[in-house]
Image (cartoon, rainbow, N blue to C red; front, side, top):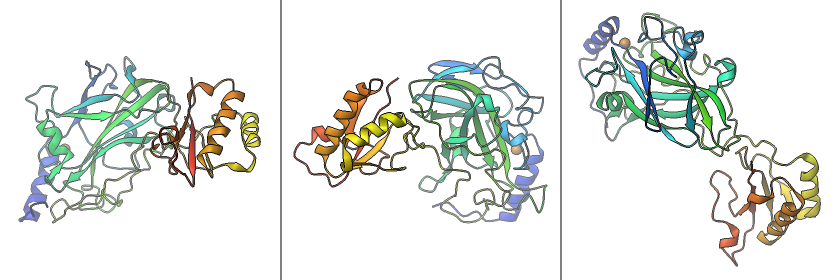
Length: 345
Ligand SMILES: [Cu+2]
């Protein structure tokens, strides 16, 4: 439970004055697999006002910050799918004595990715990280990065398709968010978006559903309108849900002809379950017993020449997280099973 602030109007006034001062933040460094990349290397270089906020959530500056769409980083830094990387914000300069972001600027941290080829335009952005407010510790993400010299660990989704991406980091400062920017452009949320270029390696094939930035936030969205000076014990993080590996819409694993062959082999026993499983690297089927599915998959495996080496069978009916393989639970009866046919590259 958060401590309730008193003197809220005085605080709000102070916060407003603080924002006039140069009390902002910018993405300063990336640390990937032990290598540190400074601003301009794979973080897109900034114009002079590198730590200034974006105020209008419909502005094209929301995509990658001011100047971020027209600048290009020197490199596109390699990062393995599923690996943890560290992003690092600073206020004035990239030193450990820097205050990262002003204490008044409480709010969430969010990270999005989009294919680099889009340059951030269109319905291309998927969220890979968010951290808002933890009532049990009364900590905002901003508290955490301030306490950790600007550093925040995030994980690249393990199953996204290899290739070049924009990595968009964002802090939203809420010290003036009690007022809708649309009604008073001197107030409203302050967005600190920045973009880096990374090249994801791995064998994944997932293409998460994308969203447009600008577009994900309205001036009056929950979490964009938020009274930091009221009593609260939760915070609704704005934007789409974080992409969970394995939850992308399935991309076809088998060609339609071999899929026909597969279902024909098993006659009525196996039916495709639309949208049960959502990773693009798996295909989902269900049937009435494990035995039928096992034989169906074995049949599929022997008739498919390209993807037979990684057929796995799981007993889970909901596809988010595969349960134990059926083969490891002999004798158990499954009223419904889901078969994951892992795509092999
Ligand atoms: Cu500021």
